Image 1 (tube, rainbow, N blue to C red):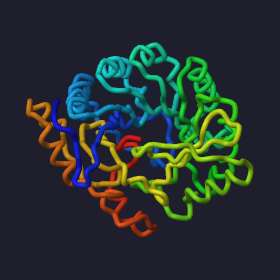
Image 2: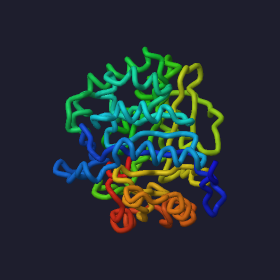
Image 3: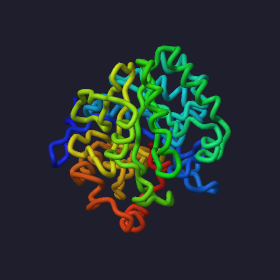
Image 4: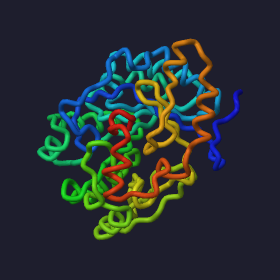
Amino acid sequence: MALPIVDTFGRKHTYLRISLTDKCNLRCTYCMPQEDMQFMPSKWLMQADEISHIARLFVEMGVEKIRLTGGEPLIRKDAGDIISGLGKLATSLTLTTNAVYIDQFIPELKEAGVTSLNVSLDTLNEERFRAITKRDHFAKTLKHIRLLLNEGFVVKVNMVVMRGTNDDEVNDFVRLTLDEPNLHVRFIEFMPFKGNRWDLSKIVSYADLLAEVGREFQYQPVAGEMHDTASRFRVDGGAGTFGIIGTVTHPFCEGCNRIRLTADGKLKNCLFDTSEVDLLTPLRKGEDIRALIYAHFQKKHFAHGGHAGFSEQQAKSEYEQNREMIAIGG
């Protein structure tokens, strides 16, 4: 067993997020701000055997959980093969998806040991769904969430809450958790990335979200773990839970254990850090990449990629230097 990945703050990194592609079948503005976005050529992307090789190295270095992300990971033609291959590793496996194609992968997911997955859904209104995503997949998304629940999967619905766009639906999403023990909602604060027109006025904060839920429901906190990104709650008498990922106003950096690998094989030690290290090029040259991994995490900042904090000015200067969200991996 190789040495674990530990940063200078003593945080042990055991959670690997692998982006399979920067392409998506939706066009959500907070993630992919342009219809004419230039996607990576296929030859730049990690191939299935390269993903498997790198993942195996990370598992040897102590990774206990792998999440597949994108873009939309299931639009890759070899997504099923990748899922099946990673399912053989000694780690838990999950993914984040918009669920449009999830019905085609139920057997592979079960065989790979996937029991829980995240589904991105920002509205329960069909017309608003079309406005946010620029696509007409609302009915299919809801149908496939129901399919996942019926097939016994735990479903975490991720909602990016944006003031003036969908913040009036918060309690509609909470209601989804009342009778479904395997359905959990995660409200995500709107975060700054290149080109997504972020500013502070669009954020619905952690405190504001709890206040909104409290107008209609009584709720109690649910005990969590050190590495949790979401603070979780359960409505009194409810079966499922709701949670808040308060990256901007209620950060969880102290317990960070996450590793991010972009679709083109670049290692990021924080979602907001603009520095990256290329693992794919040396891997293709037959080099041992473990030293690069250890060295990169010795440079990890304590919080927010080393940025002092979130402000409108920094969003336009510092955060614009990062990749688009879709090019990093959700």
